[in-house]
Image (cartoon, rainbow, N blue to C red; front, side):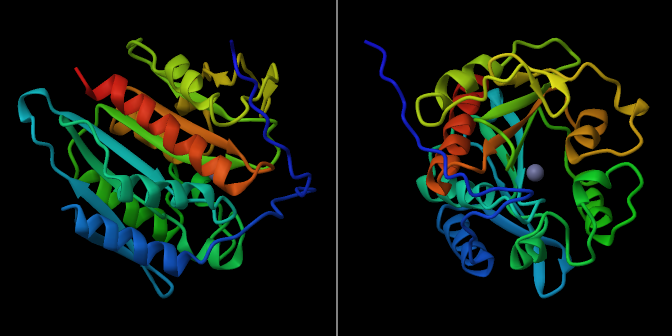
Amino acid sequence: MREILRVERLGKNHGGYHGETIDIRAVLRDIEAAAQHHGWTSESFGQQGEFSLIALHRTCRDEAKRRRIYLSTGIHGDEPAGPLAGLKLLQENRWPENAELWFCPCLNPTGFVLNRRENADGKDLNRDYRHLETADVRAHIAWLEHQPRFDLYLCLHEDWEAHGFYLYEQNPGQQPSLAEIIIGAVQKVCPIDPSEIIEDRPAKNGIIRPNLDPRTRPQWAEAFYLIMNKAQLGYTLEAPSDFPLATRAAALTTGIHAALEKFASV
Ligand SMILES: [Zn+2]
């Protein structure tokens, strides 16, 4: 018998995110401690106010079947589920043997101090990957340019207007899709957004496959930069901010595990 998932909406978000917040300094300390404990290397690629912008790297044991996977989150400071999910993933340390991982766990720490989407200068960093007007994004891209190409990227976000979890797929090479696998796993822990239009794009069962050429877009999100320069397959996971923070973090960790288990365990 199919269980019915019941998670109550909080009804707190009117005109923006008004839910729980996190102590980003403590979360980043715990992230670095968990990464170090489990043998990741940590590199600072920039400075944002008092914070180092960090990238973590984990080599894989099975090099012959290596899959290179890039994860990032924390580019929007009013989306706390991403860094929390990252911390949980690092603490669990449950990764496929053949996954080599690069992880930027918080691309906009000053945004979290202010609980707002933009950085301390009021810039939405996730619109700056085409014109590189901010030092934060320039530093991130300079770091990305020194990394190899990835086989898969996964960017973790939240949406305060969403009615449930959803994702964007970019798959110009028509590789086997991970979208249904991610949705199938996440729906056990978090409702899926049933809307047929999400963020002005057609959606089906929480899956958006934007049919557009990034070159036609005036501004680029990180995901556009990645698909144009670093990877042929990737997903942006969007947790619904109007549900409890623990539910949203669980949605993101569950989605990542489902994607990695399918993609890397070959
Ligand atoms: Zn976001």
